[in-house]
Length: 114
Image (tube, rainbow, N blue to C red):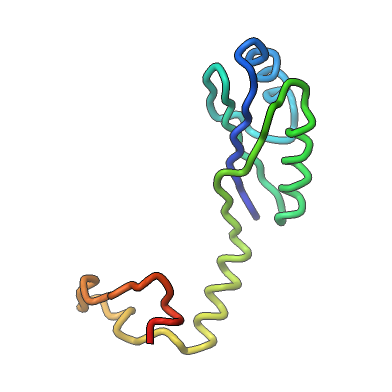
């Protein structure tokens, strides 16, 4: 399951009518708004379903722009975790609760660190 937040931009005079469209649609879940922005979330089985929903929002009357701001993909996260566990590339001390997190020296890319 994927979930993403979308920021919808519009002119103040169209805020209420667009807000009604958003709330009545089954495309997204309303979160909050001000005069020129509406924040919603969309869910999908995969990124393709989310993109299809985003495009529906972008086509709504009076929408100037609608863009994904944050996206979470449970399946992709699980797949990456499985790959990391299978690769054996995790140092054992990273899983040792007695070690200090201050010993971790992150240089922007763990793969190219050594």
